Length: 182
Image (cartoon, rainbow, N blue to C red; front, side, top):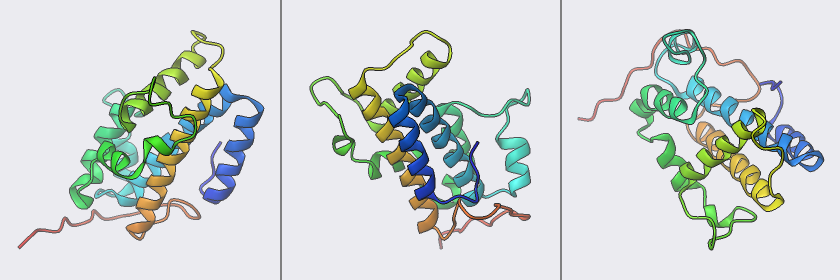
């Protein structure tokens, strides 16, 4: 569905087009984009070889792929945080201004970025499993733009750390050494 050879701008344009055609589908695909982005950033910035991350870290004990926000938070903590010293929820909270996301409503929307991401993934699950067949337009717009903002922050974070998640395969054969403070 997603191709590492595309650019972030192309991805965002495609996501926006999907959202314009169907808000529910837009949220589903924006959630998938966020998951894809987290996985790519973990591969790019992680400490372990990429094959080890793919085969051991990105799967649970039963061989199922990590597919929850708590799973991504743990994956990030194990692979990225030891080298880069930022926890995933903290990074997103620091870099995403929730009040600037379109359709943010302070009178009905209370929470931090991670809590809103959890709500977006709950809506995604409700849509996928048929417990909901639509999303209020303002809620859909807020959640969609929140997901795009969070994915953008992660892309920027990788770039700031001299890694790109677009344009090429991510392969690291040896583990990175952790920097020790003197």
